[in-house]
Amino acid sequence: MDLTKKAMLSAVHIGYWTGRASDERVINDIAEKHHSQKDMHEYRKVLIKPEALNLIKSARGRARLYWTSNTLPWLDGGTRVLPATRYKEFAAKMREFKADFDKEVENFVAAYDLLKAEARKRLGPALYREEDYPARSELAARFKFEVNVFPIPSSGDWRQKLGEEAEAEMREELAKSTDDAIAKARAIMSKDLWMRIYAEVEAMAEAMKRAKPNFRPSILGNIKAIIAVLPELNVAEDPELTRMGKEIMTAISNLDTDVLREDPVQRKRAANSADAILAKMKGYVGK
Image (cartoon, rainbow, N blue to C red; front, side):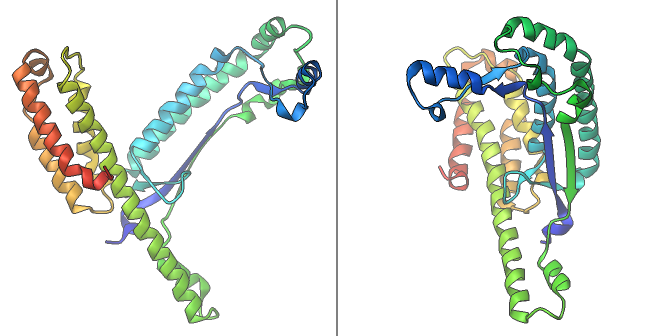
């Protein structure tokens, strides 16, 4: 299985101005008042009311949740594996998320002068400092929404780039390192999927065992959603994941949340079925 033909790497970087700043004057005052060294203190000043950035943070959160839900972990935390079959949908959704993010940034910039005027009153003359605030013309540049997609490296890449000039031993060593890294990545991706599925089935099992059931349709919907995209996300082609996905769908296909909510016998059966599935999955999630 050639992973480089089934998937690609993706990186999403979404940054925003935090609206906070340190103030050495306050730190010096505290250190002097308490007769302590100033490097033992830290003070961060809130420059605008925190809720002013909430919509921007929410837009960022939605984009990152979609990204992590539709990709798999790579060897580092900043890059994730995107199945090739999901690229078009992914690109379209990220454009939508970026448009939402940019719109919220635009609204924030439009309200910036009013927010600063309010902050001047709330901080008071002793703590408000104009130099803490970026110029309005520079504010938008403090926010960024970047999406990058690039190929997964293969051992063949190293052999071609190094060329004949490199010693054969070096070429083979780098190629082996790349192959080992991809093998490790495949294991990481598989375990991530096992963990996701385990968490949803575990949540279902716990819900079925409550004395007073009060669960939403999403308790089954979340399981169905992850199983539905499993064929695309399983780029490592883990046969046990495929088998487990089919077993889970068979187990929950006839369950109805309204019936489960009212029928303790059905809940008991569903809980037992979920527990049996969890027992089979434990070895794959390290439990």
